Image (tube, rainbow, N blue to C red; front, side):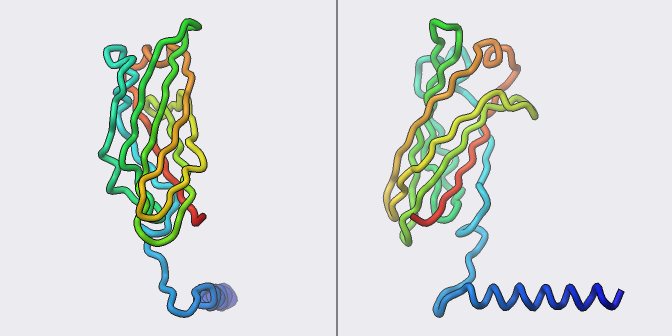
Length: 164
């Protein structure tokens, strides 16, 4: 028991030492908003509804969710039925980066129904310069029966940003 406590104290002291030496002079610890694991949001997948096919559907409700000072200010999607019987979904993302450092962002989009993931795509290497908007796009092919055979579909959108 006593040995376990001293190991924990030693580990805590080592972590504190590493944290203070990792910060340069004048640096301050990053807050959860500045440094985060991929920030994930779930939104309804309106473009997958047959009545909305072949039209762009825009979502701007994500702009207050920053990850490492980068936020998605607009996510647009358009679904189209292909001749091969698939659903082609085009995604376009616009990000905004707060003043500070240029970033490289990655946006992962998953089509989900309940706990089941039906398809996913990644908009990779979005060049998110500080104090500017940046854009990227990607496509996703889904079997038509998966898209139309579900009561409701959602998009699980994750953003991850690192210093460039």
